[in-house]
Image 1 (cartoon, rainbow, N blue to C red):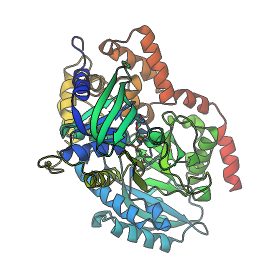
Image 2 (cartoon, rainbow, N blue to C red; image 1 turned 90 degrees about the horizontal axis):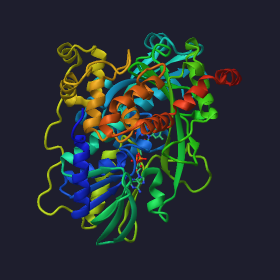
Image 3 (cartoon, protein in one colour; image 1 turned 90 degrees about the vertical axis):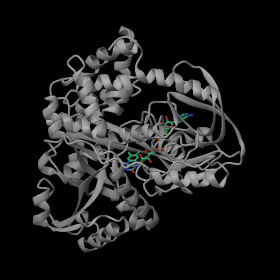
Length: 553
Ligand SMILES: Cc1cc2nc3c(=O)[nH]c(=O)nc-3n(C[C@H](O)[C@H](O)[C@H](O)COP(=O)(O)OP(=O)(O)OC[C@H]3O[C@@H](n4cnc5c(N)ncnc54)[C@H](O)[C@@H]3O)c2cc1C
């Protein structure tokens, strides 16, 4: 992999030149799921669209969520019927559009005698939920007695178990979903630039300028636009300080080896104070989350304090006593920051609505805040409707949305046989690349050791590393190992540290890194993925305190 610069670098230069030269109907600021979705919908409807992201794609909250594409059952008791109906329908649509990325998974809610909601009421609620969200017959809820529940989830706490409910939601890889939506926006004609920050806005309701800065080179650029959308998530207030206030809330997750927490369903874990904690299987790991704590700090690198880890350990130990989990079992830890629309008073964030707000400032800046990963497409549709009402519409005939049927991903077994790779490696590739999986494997087969795993047992092939470096805008090691592949959190590696240096060395020559830069990249990636924190947590006797507290509750 030597010679000319990576393909994405060539395209980025052309895109930067287009940003300097062209006028755009719309500039979308923020390349999380909200901004990517708006850029995709806008370009699909014929608007000349520019999307800019200051960090990596999904470099903010959208790579740090619980990764559930869900109708939001827990919002139903709060009367959020509209939100529940909408995100439920969105889930169905996303499963059709990207079946490799939005995958149905059975969820279980256990019910214990004398605690929480009675089984009949939960059953009735989930029955209503299924109908509201348009769940197909085969995925509708099933009521389970205690024995039936233990049959499907033998590991759960059996004392006082009365039974439970099984129903369907979907899971995703959030960062990969964002990247896929960015690619869909590009395919529909959008210019999309990561590592480009919107540094200033000079707008009027009829248009104006956005000042951009290439974070890589420091080069500035003024872009002429008819309208601008602020989709900067937790940073939305920096661009629109007088707009609706955000309440930031941290949510932490712990990752365990699947063999220590061997579940095939996502399971809701009874949590003190009505918290919302799930254990979710993903490949060779099971992750557990989340917390909901008011947050102050850098949303790009939220902390994972002892308090959150202890809380989650306590909940998971109580729910699965036979697993005897401890902090030493941890394979990963991460937090994300919810950009919630602030309530009237108080610092508590748990009760705040996950509804979105779309606001227009007097100078025409549209700011989107709040919302869910799941509802991103409909948030984008609402934003476009509002822009159309303000006269921002395509000249000529807009291209119809979803004009081509979505391509279907291949099956793992034939692919694995054809390229002589383990079927779990082929399945991972399909989960990340869908219909492109075979292209990636073909490319991998042409690379030195391209079909070999990066370390023994890893479900990441050297050839996929090369593919990402060549085509997927890998500026930094963490772009590759955290967001494009999820290897450091979800790869099931006991010592994720061990992949950092070999991977950095493999890609160094292609990205022009010298020895010092390799060291800097390894250190930055360790920080971004909380590997330093993981080492610290593994040596803390957190489970003792967690066990102490579980006995007390
Ligand atoms: C712990 C947790 C769990 C969650 N779980 C779920 C779940 O299971 N299901 C679900 O549906 N939702 C979930 N959510 C909610 C969901 O993740 C968020 O609503 C969503 O990711 C927010 O996306 P966003 O694009 O608005 O913000 P972000 O993803 O933060 O994107 C904003 C982007 O703007 C960029 N930016 C900021 N300033 C500038 C600038 N000046 N110029 C250019 N770019 C800029 C940032 O770098 C960032 O990438 C969860 C959230 C959290 C925190």
